[in-house]
Image (cartoon, rainbow, N blue to C red; front, top):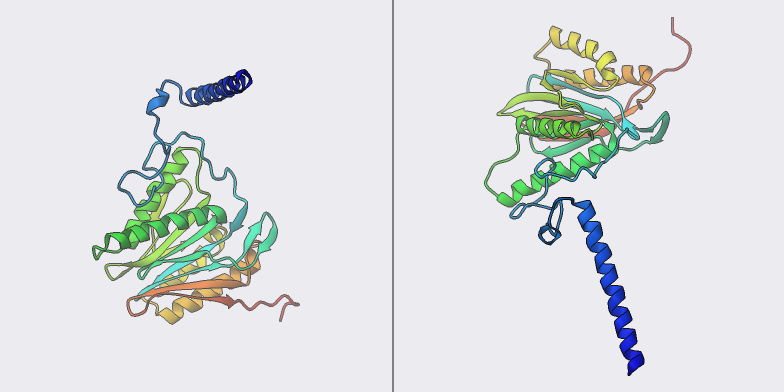
Length: 280
């Protein structure tokens, strides 16, 4: 009987010591706070909310995604035409200078009016993609007859990107939002610093240098171009980028937003190229 009592006393002392260590860790992790009143789920969803979106709660500062891009995608190209918007992005994911992943989708159908394209770090794009999907799911749960519009998504993404930049933990992406706003073509972009603007012509990555002059000239000559003309122009631009950009790829996805058919994402579309001697 005495031996059993000693075992019980020893076990009680060990449990008490373990609990004391846990309490010490909690106190050190949250200085100045009573551990008895700490939230049970730190940084979890707010009561009554469907999902915890970034920037809605004060974090501890210990959650960081990436401090430098790893697997990246290059240019996203977009242009408005008479009845809608065309946007494209190739399917290559570069691991540094290595053409590592050759079947990535960098265009996302948000709803029947919006396409979201991304250049930069692919993992950060996947994170933002999950946020947008949850946002769409929340709208479906509300079932109030309203759907997200491209201007609203552009504004929300601007706040998200600027919030992460202000916390010194940016999403390493440039996003392009293409869609129809009250029946009119809408094309806008936001970068990793939260800098945002709207324009009939947008190109990110290396395309900002190589594609913008081609798109600008074509748009100034014919701002009311047809869908077919816009698609052909995007093909030409992707061909130029494949020749000039070492991180590009001869296959791309094409996104088209129109009133008649809504959102269409086509591809991968092959880009023809010629690397032989110059034809005189």
